Length: 400
Ligand code: AMP
Ligand code: MG
Image 1 (cartoon, rainbow, N blue to C red):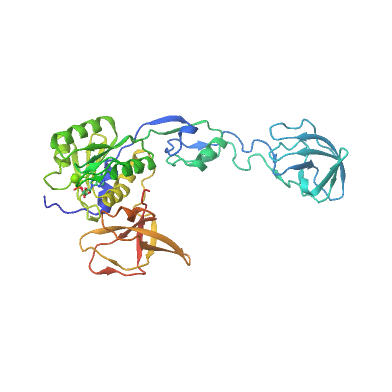
Image 2: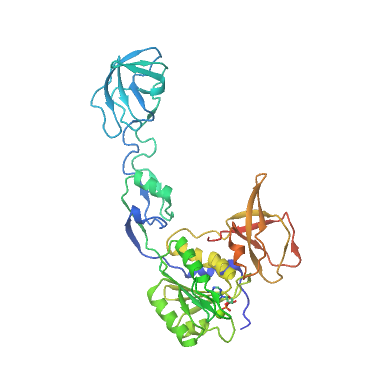
């Protein structure tokens, strides 16, 4: 029982060491948001595929102002002109229109005066002006996206421009969130004496979805040994990652650890030198990962960000995330914990090209409001006394 507490770093390493990779699947672009790319994407062809106009105006031979040209046709976006441009002629063109053969510049409409099938050129043009060469954005075969990239709107746009209609991605991890506690009531339900709302359930499901997982509605487990074991057995069957909240301490009504042991889930660690989040449990059952997070809502959110989020990234083939996502200057002094590193919720503010971190109100592990509006977690090393204002601290991404 009197195990050494392990550091955050050690706990993360053990989690990542135990985390495998999910299989991959090809999905339509429309299904790919938030997934992790499993194959590199290269441009199938030049983008743009043809020299195209950057302006609405006239395709011309580059030259001086003061010319009067005969308009011999039109090249619209999607409908190129079949005509070849020669001396004395102009072809009306729209933005994105294919630049006709022979043309060497596009003069923008604002610098022209049209009438009677003619156009007066009121500004000089240089060769290539307002023409986007073929391949200006992507060359055929050029690498555009690397495997391991999480697909956001920009990546999806680039993939489609590169010619992709579907992408090979990691399967999404199936995450089961289970909340233990006789005191828990579903969101919005009236509370009886001693009861509280199950805020961890929806919060942890949302965090898992943010990390690219598929997570059904949270399950609830009463503080009962047999039912805890039955609920966990069910969750283990149907998911890649099980996240349990609460019931993982040493109280007489904490049944998660013995139930997991009975189910053959192998403990990898229990208890981290972390505040909030000391009684965090992690174990494995084959390739399945099981996280026992403390019930206090802030502890659950912090330990999800520190340990579950990196596992969900890794299981999808994203590169192992760095422990810290940057640094900031502590804006106010913070009391240190002699034994445990603290992960405090901070508001980040840019001042004079530096980032300052201010604690986001009271930091108790039950203060859910400390999560709202927090820009990151700041790590306060264990030690005596206080960490003074002006001290640099490491930041960790808070999943929110
Ligand atoms: P436990 O880890 O089960 O000892 O719970 C620690 C504290 O967190 C207790 O005050 C619980 O009432 C509270 N708690 C446990 N589970 C949840 C939950 N799902 N939502 C909100 N608070 C919870
Ligand atoms: Mg409990």
